[in-house]
Image 1: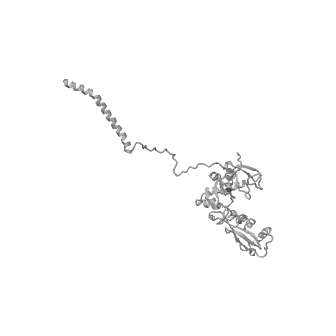
Image 2: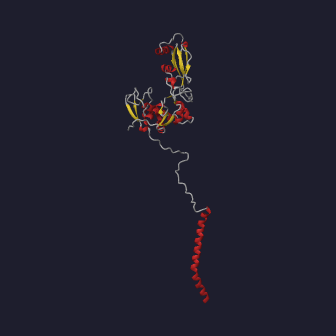
Image 3: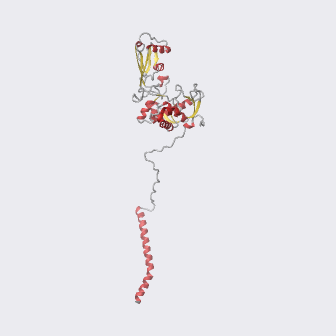
Length: 362
């Protein structure tokens, strides 16, 4: 019994050391389990790569574009209206009114953008010189002098149920081309335009007598499936034709049958009429267009006892950008700057700020 008690007392004295040994062994095992992966990864100098920072959840196909500087809003245009009033407008508001008046709002957005840049360029070029027709204004609303113009209220009335859609569409064409201008040798071009061509535009020299490098003839893709009234006719009685032509060309001999008055027309570079001899007098195709209200100089004519008939294709003077051609190119996937470079040879499309004082307009 005494020996049993001694053994119990000895075991009790040894237990604290045993407990400490077990605890130490457990800590050593835990440390080994923690350090072993690091040792296997190959060196204490390497650190695990940081996780990438979280990104926004935009779809991958959505492009975020920073807005352009508001160049147009900082430029003020003085517009002479038909009633004698001169209205000051920020350039963006003026351009909206021009594009709404000049091009159908149903056209492709890229075509509307091309029209906007052409209108902006035309305006900036006008602002750099004084016009005798409107010395107190930069531009006017007379289409025979400057560009067409329409108030937003009148445009909305024309558009009816689509007014909200078209208003926003033209606003987008202006905003998304802010400040962009068609330039040749770093200056705004004479960005003339017209409605539709008969397959090709015309060199400026053939219409106005001045050779302009960026206003040379180019192919234009629109056709009768794209353009309303692409083909038209004008019929004039023999007596009416004689009265009108002799009023402008009194030396013409219009005796005898009408079929004998005309020689074969001479074609211009676009296939239209450069000039034709009538009663022995050379008459330019542009003059005939003006005298008889023809839609273009691309016409053929026939003369007989019933009078003279002009068969006309296209609409406009034929120089620069064709609006319906621009819309056809946009449908084919061309961007607005590609359309502009198509029609204006050798230009650049870039931001341009006119050197005119900015005014605050409410």
